[in-house]
Image (cartoon, rainbow, N blue to C red; front, side, top):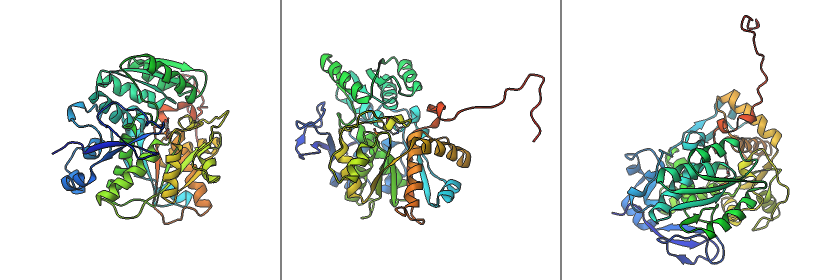
Length: 405
Ligand SMILES: Cc1ncc(COP(=O)(O)O)c(C=O)c1O
């Protein structure tokens, strides 16, 4: 009985097969490679009921993950994050069936841990000694943490404006960290050269290695499992490089083929900031790919990606699922961070809050209907973004008094 039913890698543009048991980057055409599994074998060897008996982490989907030998699994207990009802907030925005998949409760505090756990584990299995990556902060922090756990080196380059805590996470793990006075695409160019010049380093930029998406797709499997193998009507995702959205769509199609879910697909919504909306603009213009945006800015730093390598896959997933793409303003994002904290007691990240703004706006326009079941991905904890909540409180004298109210 195989632990993984990984069969091969497939070019996402041409469908050409590549060997999955060698270290691979992108296809000859420069497109992301997608992992394919022998799903007939998976169907014959495991059922959703079997999963109930397994530990509640993302590795319980190991048949549809790429690691062949469990000794290579590098884990910090990631996966099976809560799918929280938001009764007060949901009622206030007119979507009583609103749920939040809270990725703030995963190691490193963001969903990037999923991609890092699976990506690092598979890299280790294939003999990679060190990883090199550009990042908007959270991914670099997660990959350096998992690399440290696996005994691998890491070279990370991030914009100077990336959340400060993510620098500290990299430094704490012993990563070789550089800051660049620019955006993630500038960091990407630096990493590409560095990885080419060094031996034993694999470049693991977004979608330039095939397995990060496999880690992220487990969010899709978990949502279906947590809903009793049903899918919600709508899933909203804050899209930078878009890996999570592509992964969730891939998970849905795999689960359909496995017979684990029915014919219905959730409508996928790519949420971006109006300060950086390449995918939204391409969606609205009916294009298959986005154009590089200049001078982008947003406080939701994880979605400040001026041009994503997998933009065409995000657009395909959104359209195929009957979804949409929407850009929201930073002021509204900040308002929603506070609303969630005060109404539901959960401090979410700005990227997750962007999705909450989108829920509100799509409900107002009627695109989301009142009775629909809607899942928002809160991709990280607000604790990593202390500056989103300004603190202006009185300081009391030692012999003073708390005001009477
Ligand atoms: C908290 C958070 N949410 C969302 C994203 C966007 O992820 P992706 O680039 O995979 O679309 C990021 C990326 O850095 C992030 O850190």
